[in-house]
Length: 276
Image (cartoon, rainbow, N blue to C red; front, side, top):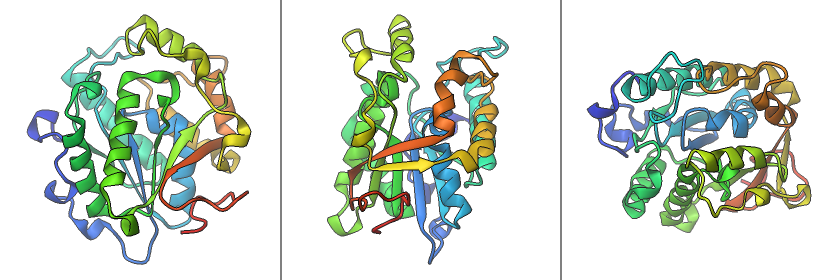
């Protein structure tokens, strides 16, 4: 993560980044989180990633972008290369808080994931999957949590990459899901700044509880999840009473997931590896 985005080509396979396939540890479950921006992993699946790491799995994380077109909530860091470097460091700190491997980045354009060649991007992600051979992949759902254009495009790319794998090699793909309405206000705010399409149904984000395949109790991992959120200080205000903290609070108790591809989960399980 110390190299600049300009030093690497987007979607360079893991095995060509000098981070060889020996990171795939034999005899261990391997988990891969694939998220569009630094910080998307924290509210959605930090508990799951920490749960898997605590049980001995090799847990990896990759971000599509470095979030360079965002903004520092403290207004200290300008958008662009400086913010990209800062957010990359925040992501590394969040991974350390969760006990997962240092992250990698595909260096796709922040705010422009929906404009890239999706077939080429899916092929690049597929190369990463073949290098790591994960048993379990987790990403955002098809509503992108709150309809962010990059989120929607990245989920489609990840799904396409998984579909390229032979059936026998296809991992379980989990989509992070959220209670209906939890992110409605976020979607509405996203429309104001152009991150969410005007015709996106902000009132339709989220799922009903009975539609969820896995409900993971993350209360024992609350401190780790909060620490990962705190690591993203330029983006996330977790102070009690803040807007984000109110959104986050139910996600510090339970994380929800649906199976989007690969082996299904047994009914009523609380183990993301069940049935693998």
